[in-house]
View 1: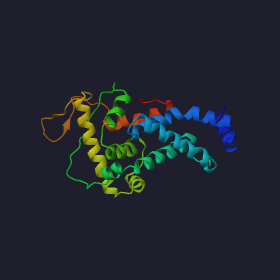
View 2: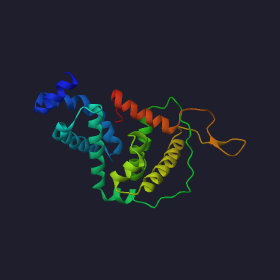
View 3: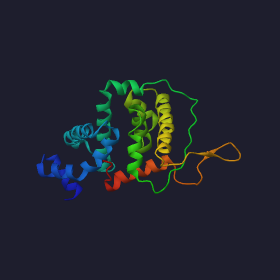
Length: 217
């Protein structure tokens, strides 16, 4: 069934088309939910709530951009709304920003699988990983994130900075990357080889999720 046929059927509340839409996109969207959720059960709740919104709002899709991207945005916003109901999330994301943290955009072995990165991201505090997911993987700007989370733009930036630093520490502890060594000049800390950065690999994670439905479960 073509995407257009699915869309037209869903507009007519055709159950078979709704089922086809869910079957086609739910694996990818569950992977998105899982990155934001505390556990698998929460991810599934987010997914179900997200698709309820997709079906109820499908008449608003105007064929401006990819249909899958439109679904993904609804699911991401559903995840954020779900998290914002959690008092611990509100406390963890609304912190005083620090400008003194020095973060290294270090390298990660190119053989590392996206699943390893996602699992490490999920070890971060809720506020940190939420901003990291939104900025580095979903592609939202700090201004957009500040609006979504009801925080200052500077807070989004500082959360992202802290998240990168903490992620690097987790990756080193799990021996996914090596501890940086100082170059002779003493000015820049680098790994021993010039491999893809954490940021680049996270962008790859986003691409993989968009195109082939890679799940991190």
